[in-house]
Structure formats: C-alpha cells, structure tokens
Length: 72
Image (cartoon, rainbow, N blue to C red; front, side, top):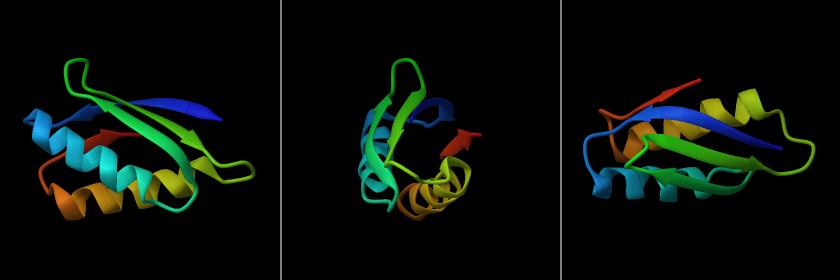
C-alpha cells in the first residue's frame, strides 16, 4: 500500500534526514520526501497496519528533526 502525506519542514537537508528516518522504520518498504512539494510518499510492507507504522515514522522523524511535522 502506498500513501502520501503532507509535511512541514524547513530545509532540503532536514527533508533528507526525514526520508532516511522513515526508510529505517520497521514496516516501511520505501519512503521519499519531496522538499519542493512538501510531501512524503510511503510504501508499506505487506500486511502492516499503516496507521501504527506512521506513528513510528513520525516519532523517528522527530528524533532527527524535532521541528518537522507530518500531517496524518
């Protein structure tokens, strides 16, 4: 399953950190962050509860960039 989320982030470097943190989250097959459009595309692994996984993604992104936001 693929989902797109609106994000709020200050710079391209911060967006890159968010992308790396999202990709390392268990249950995420792949993730891309586009700083220009302020969107995050996430593909979830088969059988995962995407809502629970996105809570983990949000938590992991906050660890690397505390002023970022993902609108679920």
